[in-house]
Image 1 (cartoon, one colour):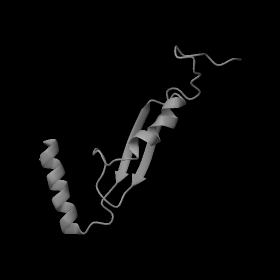
Image 2 (cartoon, rainbow, N blue to C red):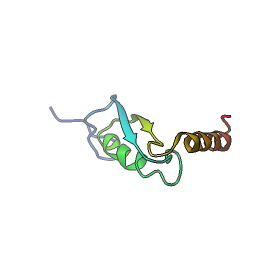
Image 3 (tube, rainbow, N blue to C red):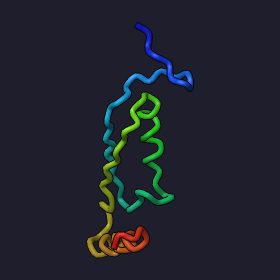
Length: 82
């Protein structure tokens, strides 16, 4: 049974699947221009037809407690979530 072609000519093998991408970083990079993980990690699942992708970030693993708290406050103020 042949796989159905999409409008762009590709065959999506795993449509309708949820993907969780776990990542870790020593600093706080998610959602900033220095985030180099989200885009590349979403390409393969998207190519296979999985478009429901959720990123789970473990960040700030090399930052001391006081510096980490300060950076989270800065991010919250920047994002308007404080």
